Image 1 (cartoon, rainbow, N blue to C red):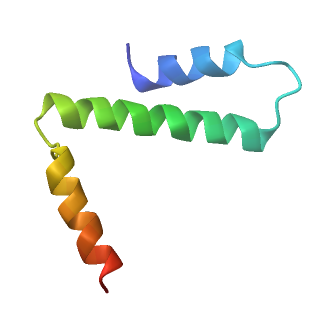
Image 2 (cartoon, helix red, strand yellow; image 1 turned 120 degrees about the horizontal axis):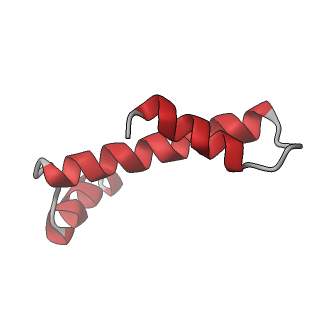
Length: 61
C-alpha cells in the first residue's frame, strides 16, 4: 500500500472532531514507525550494548 493511501485511511479512521494538530501528529508517528521498520529490514540497527555506549558518551559531556 502506498503512503498516500495509508494516510487517507488513517485520517478516515480518526474521530470527526480531530484537530489538524492531532491529524498531523498521528501521521508523523505513522511515518516514524514506517521508517523504523524499513531501517530494521535494511539492517540499520544497533544492539542494546551499542546504544548504552552511545548514551554514556552523551552523559559524560
